[in-house]
Image (cartoon, rainbow, N blue to C red; front, top):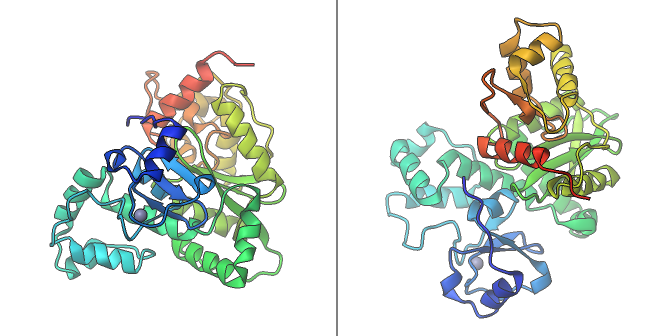
Length: 352
Ligand SMILES: [Zn+2]
């Protein structure tokens, strides 16, 4: 995957100001106050500059939790989508929370294989990634940036918070537990140079950090909710603020290790593997086999690989430091290109 660079901030603001159609496709604008993202030349009212976030790709804005604008339709190719696809696109717009099976798609008179090929070709993502992004956007659209996060959620009163819970319940697939002694987990998104991440923390520890477009994200959220019997709330807290600033230093090459406290409940075996992962020094890698030997389970290589993939706290529990026995990069939930970039960051000299 290529990392696209954006024009300068001034140039982009100018383009938005002039609704310059030449920039269509070059970047996308997302408006923090409305949770909607647009083409730079959207015919709708111009947003205030301080409320705009810029994205190089529509999918980045989607996975950062923004909804596509209904006027400029930033996700659609510039030509009209074909008529055969229209019923499906309309159905998704009507109910973005819905999970789609091939059978559902056929029921609309659309051939699933054709849908898959079309999405790959025109959106550069699978149909399932697209509908996952729409579901996520629905839940995360309630999350605002910065310190006003909680205030924004409460500003809109109980409805907004209830709406968040409903959207997240649909996303995660489990209703919040009604137990009285619930852990409250605050969920936010953190922008990184490798794409938006979703972070979760109780008031004492980080319990989730995943790239927003990761296929397993919904599963990870569900497992975490069940394990911790927790209730999810949009917002931020001290733990998440610390995490965000440590991540910023990490991506800037100014930090090697993290001080944020972690909470990663799992099976005994998973916990053993995750603890061993944290012991791999930054800048180094270890093979699955070596890791299995180190925890005294030399024949459990596949189970080690599985526990590695089940890690819910990316980067801080550095599952990206595990490689194949030949030193080759093997699978990574966030995508191999990210694994490569993370290792490059850790192997580069430290900036002071
Ligand atoms: Zn628009």
